[in-house]
Picture 1 (cartoon, helix red, strand yellow):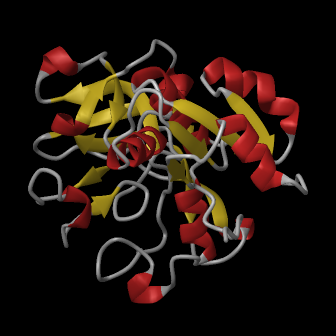
Picture 2 (cartoon, rainbow, N blue to C red; picture 1 turned 180 degrees about the vertical axis):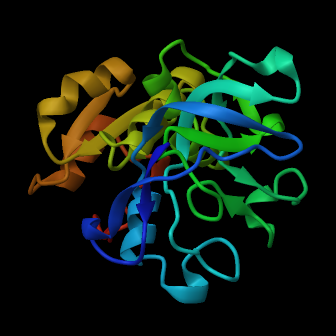
Length: 250
């Protein structure tokens, strides 16, 4: 099969297209023909060494081992499985394994991520535990792929702030993958009023279609006033997916 491997830390010149054997599933695993794999910032930062290099580069103590096939937001069709009833099933892959107890899986010492500790979805095929392959939420493979890492991240963020109907939530990076899902979950699932923060207001109408009540630009010289006006007063919570300094509140 054809695959893209990260062969070391660096720029895009560290991505290499290779021909390698189709992986063989072990006991409890299935072989998935990859139909879609999103480009996630985590695999870009892993390649660039933003998470560190050597022992600090991955989720496990030994760090990322190169070459590695990246890609964690994966949908596809099961083509080989011990349970033949699974063959032909369209699935989205839950992105990590862990022995941690419910609610603490993501901080378990043995947590391992597909595309980091396991070979990922920048390939024609991938193997993954059958128990971690779920029915696709939508019919379209590409649209369903975002329900993996991006979707889980957004759901976790909105759940953590315990969003409530009618409260005002500010979402930064609102036109990105996680940000746009934050809007949809906070507004359409929890009933909150969402103020979306973006750079270019050209995406404003689209973000309103997703559920944003108002859209403001961080490039505005009156950003704080814009937010207060859009919110009708102070905001209750901020979902920040940018991380850089944005506001200094006094």
